[in-house]
Length: 406
Image 1 (cartoon, helix red, strand yellow):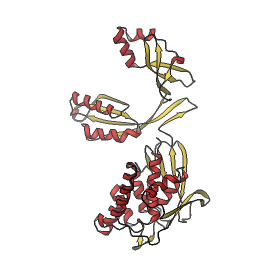
Image 2 (cartoon, helix red, strand yellow; image 1 turned 180 degrees about the vertical axis):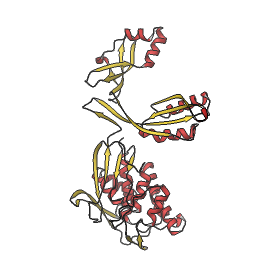
Image 3 (cartoon, one colour; image 1 turned 90 degrees about the vertical axis):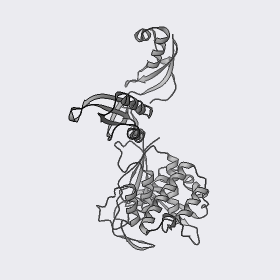
Image 4 (cartoon, helix red, strand yellow; image 1 turned 180 degrees about the horizontal axis):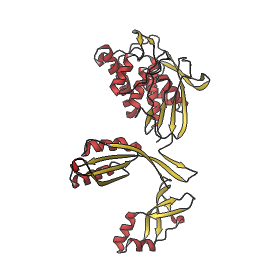
């Protein structure tokens, strides 16, 4: 799976997110299918147009409502309509979470119970298409992680069904409070609403981090254009990134980004530490090491370090705090380079043997037997590892791969 990077220099809006995802290559029918399942297929017309903003290309979307008398939709009505549509569970969950987040914000702003919330702008057909369409597009792409830059709020005021409201509007502030999202308010030159409640709610639920990825190895980019003229290019871009393992063809190496998680403990028994290290490994840590350290008050402690893949960092973090014996955790991101390798098997004088095939930077291949196989043969024959290695001649042409190069 690939990561997505949402860069929103001129704000977050539902139509910009949807346009960028369509421009990235998400099929139009993916966006429309859940809306049809909800019984809204004849209630809207989705239009896409390649356009320019201050000379830069991108995709612009617009939604025409076919409803003669658009209803004021309540949160409970929308929820029931979503549940009756029988969407796949991950998609249904995300759509419900986005609308529920908006409903909670509106409930606080208006001082009512969430069940009493009536959506006005948020309940319009174009907003329904934006929210459901964006969630459907993300469900189609299935990224391992979504990054999003800190969204700017803009300035001035905006006309709503409640009258003229200051920017950021109250619902945006409540969403920022709910999800602990930082907003950029430093650009006073733009007198317009840049980040809308819909756009912020979508990223609050779908984004894993409001930050930039440490490494940008871009596969493709989709550009969504905004509807306002703000005196500069008004666009949002979504970059599809290569997977965290990036092969450098010039050096013949595979570069990987890794997360180091580390904690020092001084109040646990060796048995506790041993059991906890096993739990970290079972949870997916690439490796876990420990060594003694001298801590405050001259106490002898143990430093435990887990090396994990970025996509597993959140899961391992939960293991540290739910199963572990620590009150804090340090993290740092590092890179490593490894030789490309793949798992397979070879036929030897000892029979079929599990092994790794490795490719050196000059293109030559060699095969290395798995330690578990050497141990098995040693126990069966009584021979030492060195004796077994001397008897085994693993030919590259005898190697049968079980997977592609890693």
